[in-house]
Image (cartoon, rainbow over all chains, first blue to last red; front, top):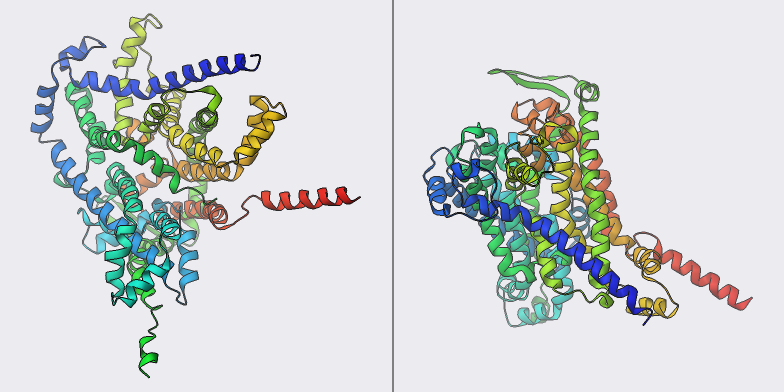
Length: 281
Length: 320
């Protein structure tokens, strides 16, 4: 009885703290949603906790705004993020399989090398990257946002750990005996086994690429090629005080919502995936 | 003869599989890195439409960066990072401990986890834009504060040094504490339940349990979290850039190193940008080395070695 009392108190404290933190996390999204449903003149009058009925008009205004092609931006972002996620997971799986299943001379060096650059920030090579793609004629195009994701050390490391735990090499042997070529073995046997790992990493690289701002801001110049984060940034740079505030909130909402929907649908899966890529124990 | 032919050496296939990764890495990372380092020794910038250089100037760029505001920006980056990171790690540790503690009977654990992880996936630039509009002088936060009578005049959050820095720190905290909580929770769940049971039998209270059992047991993952967070902090860009429109206002007190790099890149000052990149490269290289040691070492923090030593000592004492 004596030991139960303090636990009861601690439990209450824990719940209160958790509720406060959750409130903090959700409060801003709540304001965002409420304000996106109100008109500019409503917003000028002051804050209201209840949503208005102006969302559709705001959305129309956003869609028709030629200076901030938000829906074009979403399309560009979808192209970039989708392609990056596909390329990044496929080639990381390929690299991980190559290093896991074969014993070649440079295997150890290659592995050590990738591990050494595991958390290297991309920003340190940004200057050379900018010059390189300018010389290659890829400045102001979406390609330099997609192709470099072939080499993603962190995704590779995740795939490699996954292979270690779930691909017995005897399976590869068996496929060989059955006359399967090496690439076919990878595509037909190894990839299906890696599906869970690929799904987790595809989500994370999609989100990472969707939210990426630094590289696109350097590379993209023209309005019709801008991705969502750059559009948001130009919104900040413009003389925003003269804008329709309802439209601004709606633009932010439109930029955030796709990821939130994906997250809410797959939350269990995503949260379980966070820790899988962590430290090897 | 036929038998011998059948034994094919498959090992060279490995090269084909890892080739795309390395080709992509060499083109898009290594060549740019070498180029960056090379131009860091050159005077090479654009003034107006005229391109100056490249003229070899040796270490002049490095020296002039040290004389410029770079160190101030490094300090800014650190301050912004610390404001966010300290509450982040403290709250993450406490929450992780609570989530794992079955005696607390926390309801809706999954709901709380989903909610606290949510900000981590939000586009940092959109989040910063949202904070900018909400904390502006005629924004909703001031509206709420005024309507409940906490202040009579709107507070200019983004006009003061403390206000801007706190906002950046707060946003970083919001975006990352859920992630750290989930990482540390996995670490705590990895501790053998026997240890906790033994401690309970010995009459350990929850504070003692946290400080003398949980913390030492999760030290490796805690260290990993810390170092990856430092690397993340070094790259801090999106939030202060959008919040202050790239100015680091007020008076460049919230200008981070990457914002500084970005402004050099935008103005095409390749020489300076190169030298700054090399400084960043050296610092992150050192940090990468620590991460490498941790992910590739069975005994990253010497805890196993210490345990072995303790065992030996205990044996000796047992004999003697």
